[in-house]
Length: 463
Image (cartoon, rainbow, N blue to C red):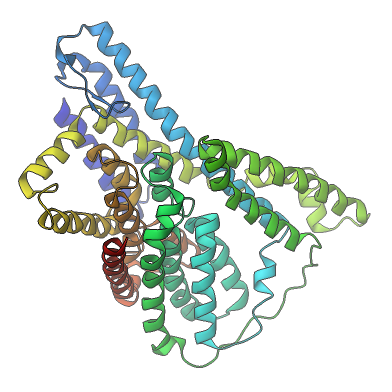
């Protein structure tokens, strides 16, 4: 039965990786393999000889000797445990995405667009990469990519030029998300799972992540597509919302407040995110009523949004398919973890290649494994890779292994356009060809990844 479950996972993963070839959205195989995996576990519960308890991070003693009802009860408790941990991440993401959509509802990101008053391709590249690095640490790399490419489309007319900028935005956004607990789903998973803390995440990963962004951006700035000037699109005729800047800073400030709330209260991050969403929503409702009360003119914007509150409208715009994909993939990985498959794989890995070996040999092998995990995240989605690492390793909180995993999984996905959520969304928004990205951008991402990895090793030696 274990073999069948592993095959279900492999084929499901293959379908996720080839979603653009088979024309099936990746959330569908993720949900299907999650449901089938747990169904097979339930049907074959009496055939399993071991069970992994995530709460104690070890195998359950005497599992094979337990009766059917006891095993079923343990399975239900484990399923509920994993669902609770997964829900923490999903509710957190829902809150963050809703806040960003509320900002966009008030056209808050136009403040950034209006700051562009030059046409130098090189300056524009550094501005967008810098913004991607900073914004992704605040509003997550997926959302930052959506926001910046949306702004880019309003500024740069030529699509053949825009896709070059989009490629570098992907690299910068993934780099920026790696050093922030709310910047990338994988880093958020490690943070919520009490594997990394905000302070140490910044200390160990800020410089490596910065280099991961700066090195490829500097190299790209010397290439032909970023030389000279370009023609900018003129300003649109849309009336400026007087609350746009206020909502931008209020929303971003509310998201930044979440880690502070966690440190003060020791509550899970999603609680702080719900508080932040509530505060932003209060101001959004107040400002929205003020906006519609100012004028009696039935504008297009009024007729579109008058029947909705800003919160309801924003909730209808969030990326629900991404949320369902994370649900499916995390729960599918949880199925493998519960059977002790990941635990056994980690043990064999440690025994066969000396993952815990003596210093410095053990550290060298650990580094190679984590770097391979980063390269693997370009081929396979980084979310399940990190989910698997949570089940494979039992190192304590803020162990350097977790920080290196956060960096590698967060930035390694830039090497292929399908390797990260930021890349996938950019691919969809600008219709970027897989092989164009592989030829033009992948080598830049690889150089940045290696530069950051070397910087991490140096930072680790210092601290």
